[in-house]
Image (cartoon, rainbow, N blue to C red; front, side):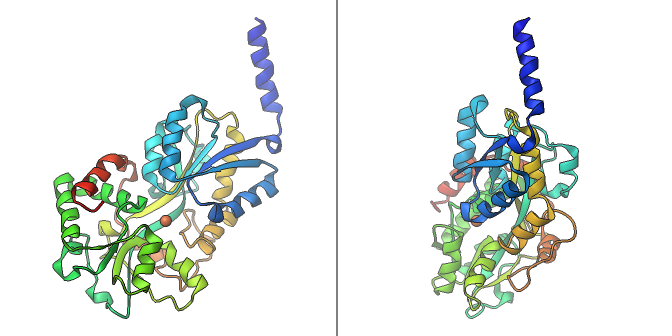
Length: 330
Ligand SMILES: [Fe+2]
């Protein structure tokens, strides 16, 4: 009897704790420089402290799986949907009121995770050495011999891997392996990451790359003359995949109310404007966000060009890496 009574008292105590006295533990696969400012404003406005553990998105997903029920994390904020898919069964369903704020294309169809900002796959190129007409029109075109030695490629980048995973879902493994082999046969300029792909083109080492949209805004913010232009494949092509960074609340969290408040804050006008204007990503909520112009492809264009694709199908990272390896790209 005493046990039950103590439990009831403990529950009452939790319920009586004001939100502002709660503390959240956030695992963030997003970089500190990008997200720390918005986490700070959340704490200023709500009084809720957020302890952040920063790490690589994939690394934190693996950590969550290892920790299981004893994970101290209340929230997991990931750079890409493949990592969210990998731990989706550890999340508690999000409230309907939160889900409704975001278009279904940016969230899990089972309501376990939700997109916070949109990131589009784009083509970048050197307008000095290449015309927009010369760019590939479809993903299949990328293996054309005319691009031999001209493409920069970060084969271990999470977004590239997710993109290859999408191609596997759309076209199958045999097709994808052939496509990867075609890229390898074209002898791409292998780079470490997306930033290095932009830099390789600016430095004249390559002429174009498949990458993510938001880096250009960051380069242009520090160098308005940065010599890179953005484009996309033909409308609806899988090459123009739109992938959100997103967040989920762990089912084992004791601070669900505060965690929901945090997610809702990230979807607020203030935060969405921050991701748009400062991080150069795209908003995932409706109207009222002022777009930045002159920083590459606009949100409207990217959304219009995006293919229809079920992001929940992107779960097999290991198998995708195996194919990239088998093609000799890593
Ligand atoms: Fe990135």
